[in-house]
Length: 88
Image (cartoon, rainbow, N blue to C red):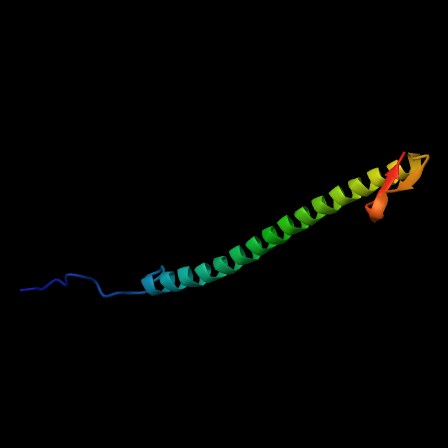
């Protein structure tokens, strides 16, 4: 009686093993974590720069207004006890 093998012997099968896929996923996860950290720190720096710029712009507008009022004033009077200056 002739016996038939249930499975042919493994020959050079192409593809990736489960271990290779898991290692690749772990490495990609580490790389993606680094990229996300870089992106978030860039976003935070951008938000800080925007807030600083808006603050400086507000101060600049206030000083421009103060300069305009001082240039247009015809008379400056010191208020009592050094509380300020009245421009008229």
